[in-house]
Length: 118
Length: 114
Image (tube, rainbow over all chains, first blue to last red; front, side, top):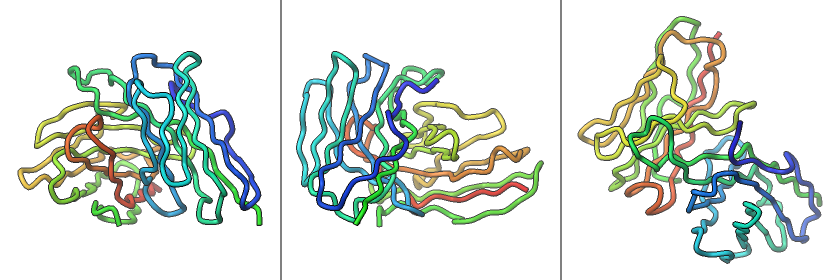
């Protein structure tokens, strides 16, 4: 099964409120995590990343929190705007089978659809 | 615009056929990644090339193959197509491996197998 997964497939928030999107991972060996945003009809777009030696990282209106104890990752979006409506994916780097030792394939969760209510 | 170009944007074909999807990475990026996105499976990593060499392999079927050419563009070949191969196929690129920076995704090639 998926080693990276999201708790809720859909999240609906009021415009202006803060959004929190959660993600669980199972590979304790992963040392790099990324959040991507995918708008309808487009490819995923990088939002923010965090390495396993950190527990928090902030960007513009976004914060990623990493709790390695419970293998949990979250993305917080402040003052959610209509343009934030998209599917959000968390991803982890993971050693891929048959990779010859390569570790560069990211494993994505299935995504959370963030819906902004006016 | 991510700088990654994928062609074709849409492709409709029949079962048993073979198609080739093409990707031009961002200028200067050495790594190319292929992902398959379907409604029920999300984004699945298929394969990665770095500077012409295969670097990592994910859930890529034996009917699928890829290569990266000296000019760093990449092609994903899908053969003996089945209905279940209908999906969005994304190419992404990065300067080095994923641990050295973000992946830049193209807008995808939508494959429909009838």
